Image (tube, rainbow, N blue to C red):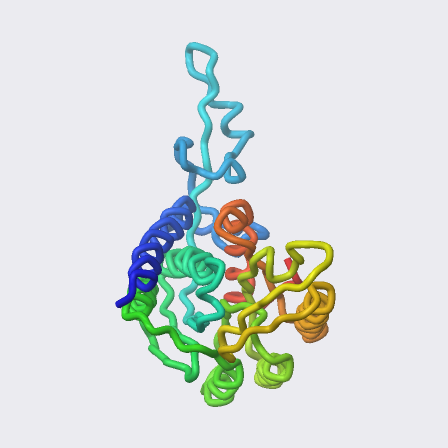
Length: 298
């Protein structure tokens, strides 16, 4: 295994642990009472702890909980899920994802989702997308993240990934399951349209999470020539920076337009810090497709 592969393996383990820790900040209880908007069940209260999300603080109860010194105690809500589900989690492991840290961003996000699925008592079918689709059915969510890390640590990621393989998988599913895809914009638009069409005709709740890096969509300079390496095709592109990024912008715009026209929600993740600042939107997207009621782009 090369030094770069070793680095990717080590960093993947770190990002997976960080994602799991972030997701664990949401407490799940055991009693029932509807909490609107999140798709979970409000269960009980407990005293606020430093790692809790302030969005779950119950300010009315806290205002009534003043000690003898006049200090207010904060209380947060505890949640649980009313039903268990099986989701399909798809992760693109192509070399395109390994560039600019996109795969690490995706692993962090996937770990958050899988930890939440674990805490909800769900099972998952894991699909690792490359030159073929590797399918691991009915796994526990924590087994799934372990399988992802093991695969990454073996090295030699496939050069390309094909959404066509995922479309074929959806055609073979005996019953509709929510599908969450973690990939990037490095796919042919025709393959995306095929996937979206199959998901629509088979009533599959589908969501797309797209890892993206700034320099993939924003030119590093106003004018001049740049050389870009096509990792999947294995050749270098040398052209005017304006023309290259106009072509990239057109490709990305077409992706977005098709996802919006098919009503498929999508979320763009621009690095680890962006995921950390928008983690609630990611978990909300998961909960929505889990319920089969996806929203537009969030």
